[in-house]
Amino acid sequence: MRTRTIRWAALAAAAGLSLAACSGGTDSDPDAGSSVDPGSFPAGSTMARLAEAGEITVGTKFDQPLFGLQGPDGKPVGFDVSIATIIAGELGIAPGDITWIETVSANREPFIQDGRVDIVVATYTINDSRKEVVDFAGPYYEAGQALMVRADDDSITTPEDLSGKKVCSVDGSTPAKNIQDNYPEAELVTFAAYTDCLDPLRNGQVDAVTTDNVILAGYVAESPDDFKVVGEPFTAEPYGIGLAKGDDEFRGWINDVLEAIEADGRWTAAWEDTAGTVLPTPEPPAVDRY
Image 1 (cartoon, rainbow, N blue to C red):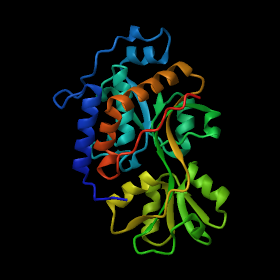
Image 2 (cartoon, one colour):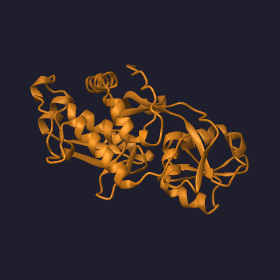
Image 3 (cartoon, rainbow, N blue to C red):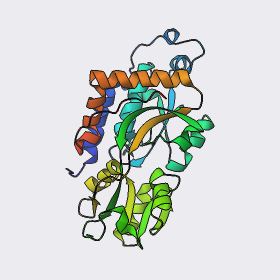
Image 4 (tube, rainbow, N blue to C red):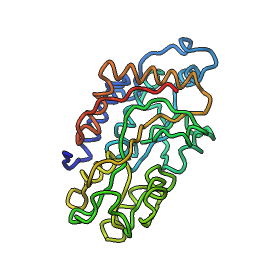
């Protein structure tokens, strides 16, 4: 895995340029957006409602380098943020008219169900249990669960090595459930956010942190002297865009957008300006129109 230290200014600048290019905004007018006629969407659809309002509320992570990390100005940057901004731009909504709400793993479904957010783009793995309460467009990326340990620790390279070890993850996350269900010999420690696991790992209070490989890569890039990712990913984690259950029209439209940006290069540009500053560029996954 190729890593290098991310400097905030460089990442934020790259993300800002990407969002402006993809959504019609410019450095001189950050609220400039593409012109979209709300009447071009089916009457009564979520797309028409959002386009008419000219604003959207998006749930995303604020603590995950490369995908969704809150910047010095309070706004998140990263690949998830870029994807959400592109979707907003296709509705004629400018970057400045997006309201970003922090979503942690445990509150993504409730925020969608309660209508607090219109969509969630937050390293959100599509799985059957979640599909019982929310719907997903995508996937737009496929990650895999991995392990991060202290840089000087060679005792852990696979999940089988976690027996008798303390492993940290996040409440309500797919990685935490996988450890609990499939590696019961490990002692699972959970917090609300992955950043809460970092100091316990540094200090030896836990032996490993587990989540998706791309998230861990961001933490290693920030602290290469402290942490390293070991072994190979041991699950498949397709990231989807969460939305209200039963809104098939909106889900189909977002899937159309995802397929369009994968074909025209905007997906690749968004990746290379954010996560691609550290990680190689993958092939985008095929959309699953379940």
